[in-house]
Structure formats: structure tokens, C-alpha cells
Image 1 (cartoon, rainbow, N blue to C red):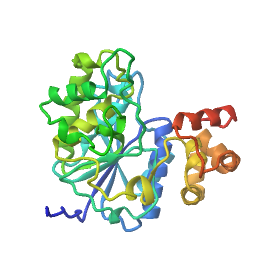
Image 2: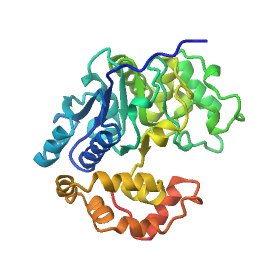
Image 3: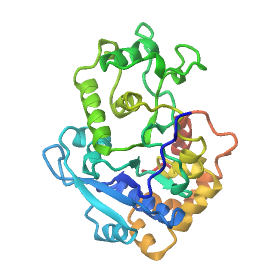
Length: 334
């Protein structure tokens, strides 16, 4: 049996923030990490894109109160340059920010719209075998009536990069069903070196964007580009679906809530309690009252009213259906 790599004593955690919604989400992430993992031995990096030709304005967090709170919570704000994506494809931030991390040190990336709900040090990361979030839906590819199917589309990408396609398949799933094919949400991922991972992620994403295989002719890559490239990156490094025990990330240790209205609609009572606990201190409250969803849902208790509209034991199957119900009831905000 292969020996599992030990989780290092120090761990670099990365989120990306910029002016607007993400600065408040980064604050919530940092507060949840410190609350749920008070003895966290690693470093929390909050990476911010710098002004440049790919941004029409200054994307950095400039609110001194937010910056002071991040510092108080032990976060290290670091800059990175947007050389390939920028405002045209802000999801590319998670790729370009990797080069700002210390080279050769294990990292875990999280989307900012995540709460750490348990002790992160209990997660047995195998940094030689990466994986990413399996809390996803079959959002890509969208199969056209007379176009290629899942197998042809995904195989064209594996062939493009010289990867073994068959070993990426889940043999328990039927052909032409989306879960048979390696597909992740990019809400978290990890590896032993951010520069190695970042360079391959960048190379593959740019190749798919700039010179896609013919099988992708009818497929949209916006906003899916990062999630199309990510399975290929993970597979190329020997990772896969099952390199983490189930039920930890996207479970008892982290919650990728996506938007605050979605959190109140579908997440557990424990997640809501955590959110309301970490946002109770006055210094946090003062900063978050500038963020309308937090002000209304948390501090004006509209979240409780939204929550009462949903049965967590009988939620709609698709996320879009939940969003539509929230919007119909007048509670959607971002």
C-alpha cells in the first residue's frame, strides 16, 4: 500500500480578494478560520490583483477598516500581477495568484465565499495527490443535439495534453453521464507547490482558451474555463476524485456557500450559527454594515425570514432552482 504523505506542520492557505463583494467574503473567511481553527499553525494569504492594463480601475481592497481587520486576524495581504486574465475573466485570479505564494511549500486554495467550519488541521491532505471540490453540478459541457458528446469533448482535451483519458473515468457511472468524467468545482484545490500547479494550470487554461479543440466549438468557456482546465491539471499530477476522505472539505470542516442568500437557504443550522457568531463582534459588524447582503440578512434578520421559506431536507435538486425561488421572494442580493 502506498504511504500517505503527512500533512506538513505549516500550511499556506490562499484566498483572493479585491474591491467589492470579495473583500467582505475574505473577512468572513479569515474570521471563520481563526474561530474554527484557533491554533492554526500555517499562514493565511489574501492575494490582491494589482492595477494594470487588464483592469479598468484599481481592483485592490482599499477600505482601511477591512485591511486592519484582516491584519488583526493574522492574514498576510500579498500582491499579484494580472498578466493574462484580469477583468475580462476574473476567475483567472485564482490561477495567477498562485505565483505570489512561497515556492515549493504546500498550499490550499479556497474561494472567498467559503467558511471554515471545523479544525482545518484535522484534514489529512496528501499534497502529492491533488483534488478539488466535488460539490458541483454538471454545468459543463452543455451537450448540443447534433454535436459531440461528453466522451468526445473530454477525450479531445486529454489528447490535446497527452494525458491518459481512460484512467480519469469513473467506471461506476454510465457512459455519457456527466459524473463519469473528472469534473470539479474550483472552490478549493491543493498541491505541494503553488508554482508548479499554477504554471500547468495557466498553460492549460490559455491553450484551451486560445486554441480549443474542434470538439469545443459549440461550448462556452466563460465562466467555465478554470473548471475545464482544473481536472486536467489534477489528473496530470496524479490526483483524482478520492484523495481526501469524504465529508471534511465541503462537509464538517468547510462550507462553500457561494452567496449569503444561498447560505441562509440551504446550509445547516451549524453553518448559520457560525456565521452569526463570527459576525457579532462590534469591529466586524462595523465593517460588514457597508455590505448590503450582510447588513440585511445578518443584522436586520432577513436571513431568518429567507431561511423559513426552505425545507433543508427537501431542497430543489439544482442550485439555479434555489436561486430562482430566492429571487422570486425578493431576497436575492450579492
